[in-house]
Image (cartoon, rainbow, N blue to C red):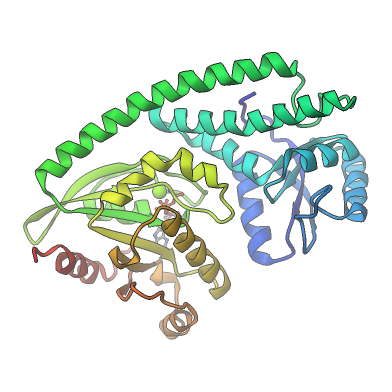
Length: 363
Ligand SMILES: Nc1nc2c(ncn2[C@@H]2O[C@H](COP(=O)(O)OP(=O)(O)OP(=O)(O)O)[C@@H](O)[C@H]2O)c(=O)[nH]1
Ligand SMILES: [Mg+2]
């Protein structure tokens, strides 16, 4: 059940909200997952009960699907299995929702043992609700089996998923133990820990590389980093540690945070969190991504007073725009420290280092 579309380049219709932000992000996600979007259909409300979209829109999608011979409908919302099934059955093609799309990208990007297990577990969790829905429909006399719900015999499939889940959970426990061991070693070293957090593509790894003189992968595509790395660097002759983490995204299914909790848990041990924001984007995108980041930080129960707000990619922003954008962004209580930098060009890094230094000074 786990596969990627990278070689296949499947033809897809994208169903999303009618805002530039939603369309751009959804296109980026779909392309990152290897789909070729041949048509975009938008509607204000895509969380309706039966098909996600309204009946008329669903019929429109059906006609486009037939006319353009598309392979998949990419639906930019988290769908219930029943909605996914209804739409797939009506249009006679598979439906990939936002959740599945993110899972597919994660699967493609996972490089370490830990992240591979985390992604596989998240996939199985996604599958299990759908197999259960399939069993329910079968009992009602429907004949599910195609269009997004898989073609396997439900009961056997369910058992198989449960068995694989147990096995993977055991493996994950081992990986978590390793991580905990490293953490104990680090904590006993008493070195201050700086953690990077923020929306995907904000420039976290670029900043991480700059500060720690590392060469980790950075790229324009979403979710480049799926694993937490920790390195050390010096601030005024004092050795400190820095961790790079997985990027955030809006409308992330809650269990995905659960799946990556051990990776993100580095943030809980941080003395300072650098919340990185791509400040070269328009105010709307900045506000949305900032809001999503804060939501995720709060779900992880992280105190905001640990954060320094790092406005990145300032090389692409005109100086008069900085103030304007900043006043547009409501700085949340408890997060009073802000610095604008360019991780790419090294602009304002001494100022950031000084801020970190002040924060980690022994009381
Ligand atoms: N112009 C400009 N580009 C930057 C700057 N910092 C990062 N970038 C670019 O932004 C893109 C994303 O950077 P990454 O460092 O990979 O972003 P990330 O936050 O680690 O992303 P994920 O790992 O996907 O969460 C890359 O193409 C970088 O070259 C900057 O200060 N200025
Ligand atoms: Mg990264």
